[in-house]
Image (tube, rainbow, N blue to C red):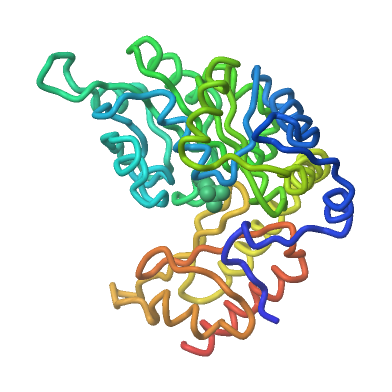
Length: 348
Ligand SMILES: *Cc1c(COP(=O)(O)O)cnc(C)c1O
């Protein structure tokens, strides 16, 4: 079996998680009567230091519900050009909520208050309304990069001064916390809403939460229903999420250690260079040859050559993304790294 580094969404529930799910008390959550869903929502709100939380089917649903609660059709959402909300949510912000994306460019997914101000439309009847800024931490497409907390606070403060709301796409906020030794509350205190995933590094099979003040979550519950995202005996899956929240947050540092281990090995492969990983995502670049010769292999071809030993996705013509997670051990990363070295030596 190849080591599967395509995504941290690939994890399967552990035996203990399955036992918790099998034993879950359930009820009809659309009537507000599923005790396990209520317990999950209460607990995740407590961990994040916010008033309330809503269990949703996916991070995508959580983000889109939040955008809709915060906006009117025609409003402008400012975010990084590579963000999940603009790139990987099937155009939902335009299709479902009539919102206009406005992108900030940067190498690592972060931006400054000055970069935010540059994107504002003048306040008059000709232009879309500046409504919302969306942050992403860790930043998926930029390679699991972590915002500096101080910059996050500065951008939130500027956004609020400018009359904008702030949504944090925290699908991997748990990784950002472990990578920086910060608590979730430090990231949520200055935002108007936050979404977090249970189904990525935490290893639960289903679901995310979208969180904020009580009034926000009340409206989010209505919008979730409008989008068809209400569930019935969802305690079965919420139990997996609750188990993951309680038992799998601390271990994320193992995924970060494994990402560094993998990157260290891949860097020994001739013609490859990793962006030093900040969390559980490793971006592997295929370098140009000496004297500006083209790279000796494309990312797609290298992934094909590795397929017996490692599975990974390409994210560019000469870039591969590998993601560590709950179901990948240090020994797996060792094997994967050695496979990269062998493949590149074979091409030399
Ligand atoms: C994975 C991801 C999401 C949403 O994930 P779902 O697959 O819809 O649960 C949202 N934002 C970011 C940054 C992600 O990486």
